[in-house]
Length: 274
Length: 274
Image (cartoon, rainbow over all chains, first blue to last red; front, side, top):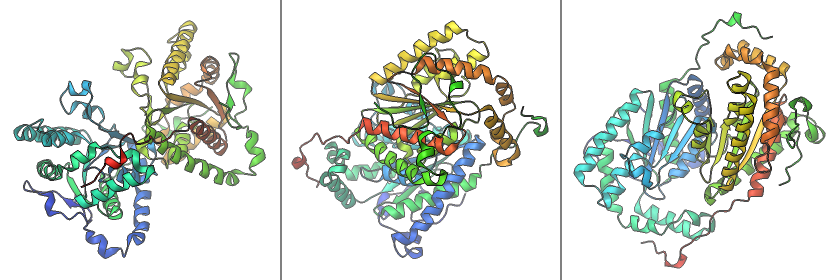
C-alpha cells in the first residue's frame, strides 16, 4: 500500500543508516501545522477513527494488526503507545512488554516467547520492545556475533511472513531520538520525583554504547524492513510529530485493511424470541 | 473493606437467591441523581480517577486487580467493560475473554486456562466470562452433577485465595437483567443490522433454560462470595446505574489498595548523565 506522507521514513534498502535521518524533522507536518496545538484536531480525528476501525476489526474477527515499537531508552515507547491507544476499548488491544528473558524463555529459541504474544484475531497487538532486542542488545554486548545476527534477521523475516500470511498486518516503528534529547529526558527523570521510578542506573551504561546501538539498529532495520512488515523511523525529539505520524500510518493501514462486521449466516425470519 | 453504597448487592450468605434482587433497582442513585444525564459528571470523575489509580498501580508493579464479569446473554458484559476501561491506557489492562474451551484446554483441569490469564503485577485484569462458566453452563447441560459443582466451588475459592495471597485483589460482578429485558435486547440485535453479528441462534436455546441458569448462578454466587473475592449482583436493566455502580466499587477498591510509585533505590547524586 501507499502510506500517507509524514516525517516518518520508510526503510527501503539494505544500506540504510539511522544517521541519515533527522531526529527533529517535522517534514510535511511543519508545512501543514503552524504549531503543536494546531495539529490537535487532526490527531483527535485520527484517534476517533481508530476507535471505529478497531470495533470493526473486532467484529470481523478474522485478522489482526501488530504494532512493534522499538527505541533507545527514553525514546518514548510508553508515551507513543498510550497516546495512540488510550480511548480504544482495552478489550480489543493486547499489549505485550518484553523485558530481559526469563530462564524458561531462554531455554527456547528467541522467537518462542514472542510467538506466544502474537495478537489473536480481531485484536490490535502492541509489542513494547520485541524480538528485535535479540539482534540489538545481544549484539552490542557481544552475546552473538554478526553472522548469528544475520541468521536471526532471516528467522525474523520468515516469522513475520508467517504472521502476515495468517492474517496479521504488521507495522514497525523505531522512535528516533538524539543523544542530546536522551540526556534531557534522563535528567528529567532524576529531577522530577514523580518520574524517578522510571530511571535505572543501568540506563547510563547502555547510553555509553550509543553509537554501537545506532549501528546495530541500522543493520536490523535495513535487513528486516519488508513490504509486508515495514520499518518506519519516526523522528521523535518532538512528541507531537511522533504521535501524529504514527496515528496517520496506523489509521491509513486499518483503512486499507477495511475490516467489516460479518453478515448474519442464519435465517433472520426463523428467529422468534419467546 | 467497606464498599460504597450503590444499587449493587454484595452477596453475603449461602442461601442467596438472585430472585430476591431487582434487576431495575436504582437504589441510592435514584435519590442522588434526577436522571441518567445528571449522573454523567460523577461517572466522568470516577473514570478520570481510575486512570490515575491505574497509573500508580502500574508504577508500583507489586499488585494487581482482577475484575470478573458474568451475565446471561445480552447482560451487558462488553458494554460495562468498555464503559469502565475505555480511557485507561491499554498497556495497563489485560482483558481475557473465555469462550467454549478448546480440546487442549479440556485436556487440563478447569482452572488451568484461567490461571494462564491471571493478571500480572501492575495490571488491571478483566475476565469476560470466567472459571464460573464451569459451574454454570456445564451444570445446566448436566455435564457435571451438583456434587462436582460444589467440589468446584471449593476449588474456585482456593484458587481465588491463592491469587489474593499473591497480591491480586478480586472483584466479581454479576450483571443482573430480567428475562423481558433480554428479549428486548435480543430483538434489537436482530432488528439492527449493525448489531446482527452479535446474535447467535444458539442463544435462544440457552434462553429457554433461563430458570435453570438463575438457579445455578444463585448457588455459585452464594458459595463463592468471600471477603477477599466478593460477588456483587448489579441491577443491569438500566445501563447507567450498572456502569456507575461498577465504577464506584472499582475506584473505592483501588483507593483502598492505595498503590504508590516506588521510591528510587539508588544514590541520586551519583547519577551523572554524560
